[in-house]
Length: 203
Ligand SMILES: [Zn+2]
Image (cartoon, rainbow, N blue to C red; front, top):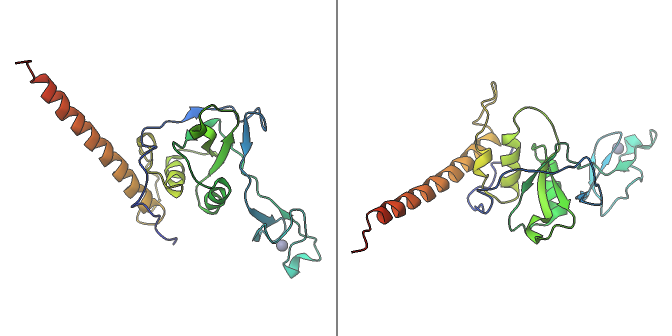
């Protein structure tokens, strides 16, 4: 079982975001670019190495791979679905966080959007795996990057056979409850303000 996710200091900056359509099937290097990952993986033994020490395309340091010429390749971090998930006020280290995402169980990658006017929109999350409802993955990725999950993706699916007392599910559900609670509080404040406005008569 993995460690619980850190969810007590999440930013609520992404609470209202929704997915945006983006054509990742076209414009590679022109409108978007893969955030490269600081990791190399042997194509034979599948072991991973930090690339500051080893060379892409070079031999695997594992002795078992000498005879079979296992070489180190950079894992692909390409999006598979044409949607981007915004990261408001993003200030992370993209390559480091790409590695964090890659090492998690979330099927999500960081993608750089090129030529967007607003600096905040320069990086988005994108799904790197297909499948059924990926709300757990999206929420998981937002949490790994320090964001409370957006309300839109807190409608988590009910997967038969998934033990929600296990990580990362337990932490994801907890973080979603925090997000929902913050929206409820905001709605209540707004309601109070409107009720107060309604009873104001100008006298
Ligand atoms: Zn190897």
